[in-house]
Image 1 (cartoon, rainbow, N blue to C red):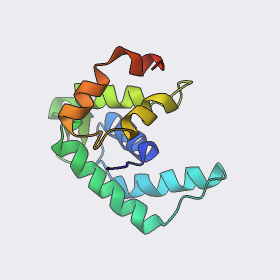
Image 2: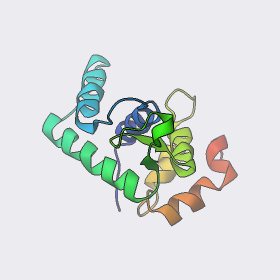
Image 3: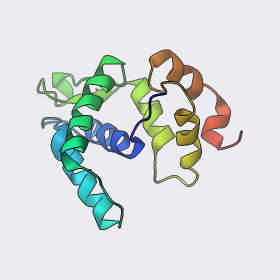
Image 4: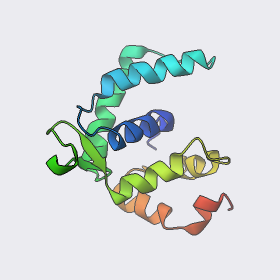
Length: 134
C-alpha cells in the first residue's frame, strides 16, 4: 500500500497553481513546508528526505496527469505547471482549509495507490467523499 504525505502534495499543488511567471521548485517548497510544520509545533522529520520526496512527487504528479506544463500565454516558462482537472479535483479533496478535510484523505489512504489515475478518478467520482459521509 502506497502512503503519501498529503500536506506536502497539497502544498505542491498550490504552488503549481500559482507558478505563473516563475519556476516550480519542489525542494524549496519542501523546506517551507517543513518550516511551517515546525512553527505549528509538529516535527517535520528529515529535511533531506522531505526534499527528495517533493522531487518524486513533482514527477509523479506530472506523469500521472495531475499537473501539466503551463502554456506560455498563461505565464509558462518551460519550468512551471498548471493543475489539470484531475489535479484540481485532488487539491479540492486535500484542501486543509475546509472543515472535515481529513475524511477524503482517509479515503485516499485506504486505497492501494490513491494517485494511480484510474483509482483516483474512481474515488473522486464518488459524491460521498466530498461530503464527508461514508
